Image 1 (cartoon, one colour):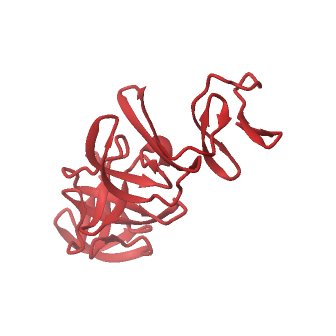
Image 2 (image 1 turned 120 degrees about the horizontal axis):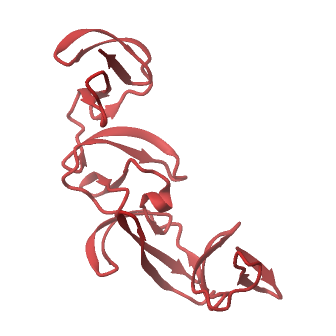
Length: 212
C-alpha cells in the first residue's frame, strides 16, 4: 500500500515497513502510481512492463504512466510491443486487459476503426481465431452486454442460437442472439430453433437450457 509522509508517498510492504528496494506499481484511493525505490515518482512518464508465470500461463503486464500516475484514460486497442511481442493489445484504464487485471476470464471486447474485437483474457491480445461469445464493458469496467464473435470480430449479421462452451450430452445451453447481440432481456418462453427443432422454448436471460 501507499502511505503519505512529509508530502511524499511511500510504498509499505506486507511487513508494514517502507520497502526501498521496490520499483513497480502501487495504488491508493486516487489510483495507480509509479514507485521507484519505494517512493512515488511524480516525474515519471513512460511504461512499466514485465511477465509473471501463473501456471500454465505466462501473463504479460504493461502499464502507462503520466506524471507518475497510471494513465486511466488509455482504453482501447493498440498495435504495440509488450515484453518484446508485437500484436494488437487491449488496454483498460492504462493496463493490459488480462484476467489478472480485469477479473474477466471470458474475454473482453474492444473497439477500433474496424469494429469490435475479442481480446483473449490470458494474453490481452486480439484472438483472430476465436468464434463464440464475448462481453463488452462500459467505462467503469462493469459488464455491459454480450455479443457473438466470428473469427475474433463481432458479427452483427448473425441471428440464431449459439451453443455455449462446456455443453455435455445430458446438459446443454444455447444463447439467443439477434443481430449479433445476446438477448439477455428475454425470459419466459421464446420461439426458436434449437438443435434443429423449431418450437417454443423456456428461456432465462437469453439462455435456453436443454436437458436429456
